[in-house]
Length: 402
Image (tube, rainbow, N blue to C red):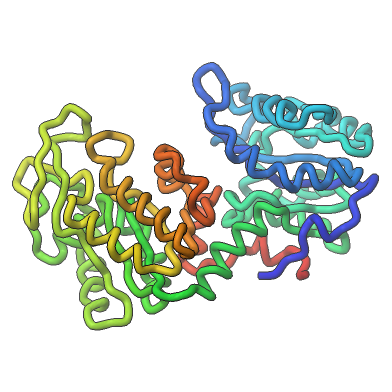
C-alpha cells in the first residue's frame, strides 16, 4: 500500500483538490468542541501552501438530508477554525453549494499559497451515491487530487472514488494523514512484532465480528471487554444478569469461543465485573466474580480482569485497541478502560507499537490525557475497524503507486 504522497508532486501554481475529513463535533451554538481532525490535516495543507500550491478543500460534516443547504451542517465553523490555525494565510469559504457558480469563481480566483474551503459535500445526495456527473464537476476544480481523509476511506462516496477516477491522468496522491494511517493500520499490523495483542471492546459482538475473524491466527491474544463480552459469556453458559446481550449473536459467539480453544490465538473474557443497576454515576455499585445476579448489569471489567489484561499488555510488542472496556464516560465504570489505556502507554514506553483504533477508543485515551503517549491514534473509527477486518479500500487503491 505504498502510495505516492502530496510531498512527492510539484504543486507550485497548481490547484490541489484535497479531500479532508472536517467532520468535527459542534455544540448547539455551532462552535467546534474538538478540532483534532482539522489539526491532523495541517501537515499536508501547509505542505501545499508553503510550496505555492492553490488549495481547494472539500469535506462532509454530519448527516444532512442531501436535498438542500442546511445551516446546522455548514462547514463554515471548520473553515473559520482553519483560518485561525493558519495565521497569515488567505483562507476563503464558499457557502451554499460546493459545485455552484460561486465555488467555481472562488477556485478560479485562487492565488499561490491560498486556500478555499467549499461547502458540505453531503448537501448533495450525489456525494453519498457516488454519482459521476457530480464528481466531474468537483474534479474540474483540481490539477492534482489528494486524499487526506482516512475517516471516510472505507466509503465509495463521490469525493473519495469517482472524483479521482474522473481525474485519471492527473496526479492522485495520499496526504500525510492518510499515509500515516495506512502505515500503522496496514503495515504495522501485517508486519507486527510479537507478542501481538488485540484489545477489543464496545457494545456489540456483531460490530467486531469481522475484526475477530481476521485477527484470529495473527495475534497472540484477543482481550475482550465492554458489553460485547456478555454475549460471549452468556453463550458459554455464564449468568450475566441484566447485562446487554445480543441474543441473535449467541450461536456465533459460542462458535468463535469454541474455535479459539487450543488455537494460536487466545480469546480472553472478563472473569469479574463492575456492575450497576443502571448506567448512571449514582447507581448502586457491586463487583461480581463469575456470574452476575439478576437486576445487575456489567458496566466495566472488574479489578482482576483489568490487572490480568494489563499484565498481558505489558508483554506485548504490538498492541491494537478498538473499543472501551466499559462505560468509560460514567465513573466509576471508567476504571477498566483507564487501566488498559495506562498499560498500553507503559508498554509503548518500553518499545511496543500501539495503535488506537479511533472512535470511542480515541475518545477514551484523549479523555485520560494519554493520547500523546501512544504510537498512533486513528482519526477514523469505522475505517480503522474495516482495516482490522482486512477490508479493501477502493478509494486508496485508485491512488498512484509510489
